[in-house]
Image (cartoon, rainbow, N blue to C red; front, side):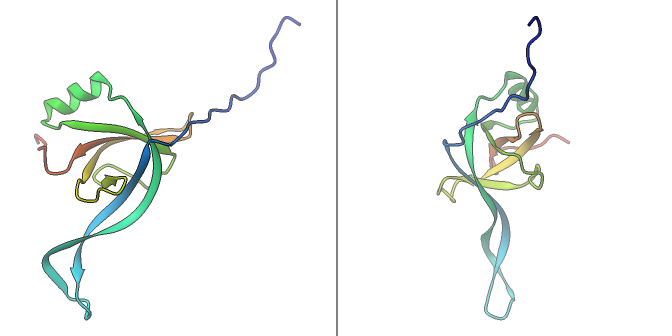
Length: 126
């Protein structure tokens, strides 16, 4: 046979570098439902196992020009409800929060890539 048999290639990625938890900051409420000022709480949206990826030089340059210092790039199984502007923490360290500054839906590999920057440690030139 001169031709090769074509078949879909199956890609299996191991998401074993840790766990990312996507959260939303909300005000803590008392027993009557009244928000307590100055006491935010974290409401969990979802948690997923991730694998670490390397941050590309192009992303470092693009976000560095805007004053954003990128900390990590992680990949999780493909989810469409996660977008930029959300907040996350890694593993069980809910004291160190990260802003999701870029999301890339990699449909070919069935995963979502996210760029994370430490929360509050950057500014956006607009």
